[in-house]
Image 1 (cartoon, rainbow, N blue to C red):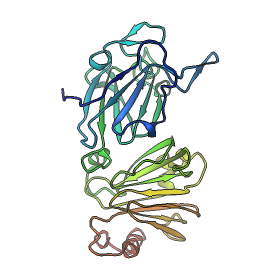
Image 2 (cartoon, rainbow, N blue to C red):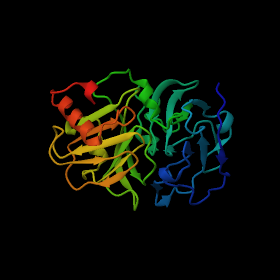
Image 3 (spheres, helix red, strand yellow):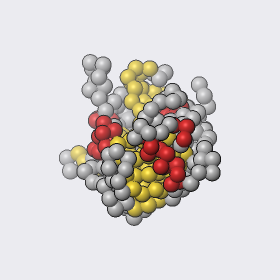
Image 4 (tube, helix red, strand yellow):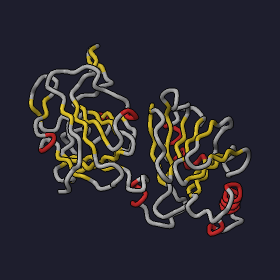
Length: 308
C-alpha cells in the first residue's frame, strides 16, 4: 500500500453545525467524506453539521493513495446517533485538483465510480448495478483511491488515453462552483461569472502528449456539457497555463470568435457552438491568430495537423 500523505480531520460524535463548505473552498488535493448528505433535509431537519473526514493527497503528484473504509483512517466511524458503522459514507465533496475512485468491495475491487474535481456527490444517486442487495453506493463504499493533479498540474486522466486520439480531449463537468485556478492544458467554461458567485460548467483538457483539443455542439451534448450548463450559455472562459482557447459562434469552427490566451479569462457575448484548445508549448513562434487559422483549416479538411 502506498503511504497516504494526508491531513485527517475527524469531527467528534456530537453534531457540529456548519461543517459543509463548497468544493471550491476545500483545500486543493483534499476531499470531504460525509456520513450524511449535508445539503439534504429529513423531516424538516437539516443534515448540515453531519460528521465528515477530510482526506488530502499530496498535491500535484498524481500518485494514487489507497483508502479502506472501515479501517485505518475510517476505523471508527459513528453515525449521527452515535452508532458504530464500518462504511457509512453518504456524500463526498472533492476540492480543486482532487480525483477519487470509489469501489463497492475491499482492496479496490467490485463496482467503481470516478469522482472528478469540484463535485458534490450524493451517493444515493450513484447506482450499484450488479449488487442485488443494495441499490446505490450510499453506505456501500468499501475502498477508494484518492489522487491529485500531476506534477505538471495537469488533469491526471489525460494519461489514461492513448496518444494520437482525435478528437484529442478529456473533460469533466461541475455544478455550483466558484472560480479556481485552471489546470495546465485545460480550459474552463462557465454559465455565469464564477468570480462573483456560483456557476455551472465544464472543463476540457488535452490528452497525453497532445497539443490540440476540439469539440462542437454535438460533442458537447454527447458528453453532457449541455446538461452541465443548466440551459444557459457559456459566458465566462478561463484558460489554463500553456493553453490558448478559441470559442466560435458556429458549430463548424467559424463565425464570430474569441481567442482567450493562456492564463487569461474573458467574458463571451455570443453563443458558443464550437471550441478549440491549442497548446502554446509547441507554438514555434507562431502568433495565436496563425495557430487558430491553421487549426480551422485542419478541422475543415484543408490542412494537416502538423501545421498547428
